[in-house]
Image 1 (cartoon, rainbow, N blue to C red):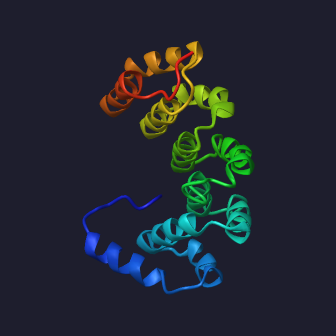
Image 2: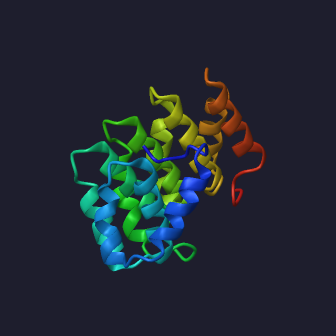
Length: 185
């Protein structure tokens, strides 16, 4: 799972600063690190650096057995080459495939990443996950849909998520309906 815990923010800052001293080649193997803090910090640094070698490593990680490897690959692809996203078009098919992963963490990260990429072409794949069994996935879908061009199908999916039994899902869907949506059709 992607490290989002803020309880050790000083440690995270120190790790992030230290990683700037490493070459991309030295950082790539660290994407497989077992420690969430290191793995996520490495991925964030590599997202900013971008590059063909980083994209290639992400596509290798997608095929790994450990769900943490597939999860970090989805995270990496979602913002690779920030802010220009030069690998956007190549990343979307990989992320769509990860939407059907056996692990909810991977599906959730893939959905969020598609939102970051404003992947209108993945709307149908995301809408399927409105009925996912895991609330974290449904919340990520609401987030992702908020960044896509608002179509009747997306609006309907967000309205369905507004009736979800999970408060976080409802809140995210409400935000998406009120504030999200880059374009209206």
